[in-house]
Length: 325
Ligand SMILES: [Zn+2]
Image (tube, rainbow, N blue to C red; front, side):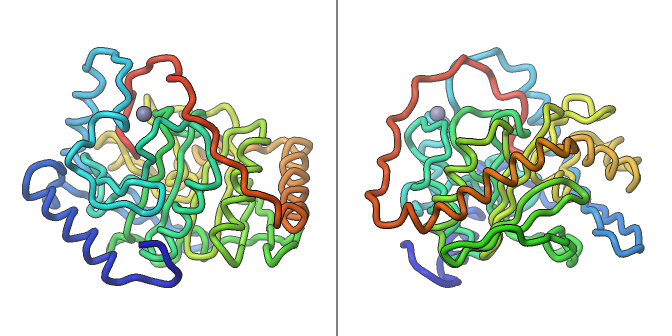
């Protein structure tokens, strides 16, 4: 199932599988409840995409009322819902998606760290399906300890000029065919362009483990965005709404109708800046870490791939505070 290049048959199979689960009532999505807005400042900056789905809202409320439990949903709640496998990852539906055709890629084992093996499969899934694959870890908008990637197809109403299309990134390191470029606006981060999923995975795994900051990840075609996060997961005025990588790249999955209707470009722009690292010395430290990893890539090659660590012991129980966003 793993391979190079776009696989239209695989995408078709996944979309049909998703539809089948929706018809069966296992995926709770109603197109009639979906509302979207595009906010385009028309000054050269990226247009924002706002999404609100009242069907999902009811689920968020239900989850909030549910009793705290130590059960990890990705170890127990997806039986019979697998749409397939991609290497080490199960392909699951997001059962309460905001937008149609949202998927979850997750190991069957309770893995909590970004091992290269899983990263490589997440990157190659993006390459084969053309979907954006992203990861919100703990401290970076994610609610789960279990390693989870999310994947979604582009929505037809989403603005064409997305974050990547508008991004101004300055290259600072090169090695083994990989280029690392730094961007500082509208949020701080690094864009990696690598010729293979294997290289991307090795780099990202190393950087994520060595970084003192939690990092949001987005894989799109040959590009990977790493967006380090400060301690702010919920910007001022956003209630219990944690910002993940989608918000960082200008796609706001709104948790309440009022925010969806009233949000202005400036308010969202400011909120997005609140989650970004602005400390110059800290930024330089992160850039140094990436540069070291990129230059070490060639040196590491040829050595035996390190085995993924054993699944770690369950971490402190915590009920999901929100569904995947
Ligand atoms: Zn788990």
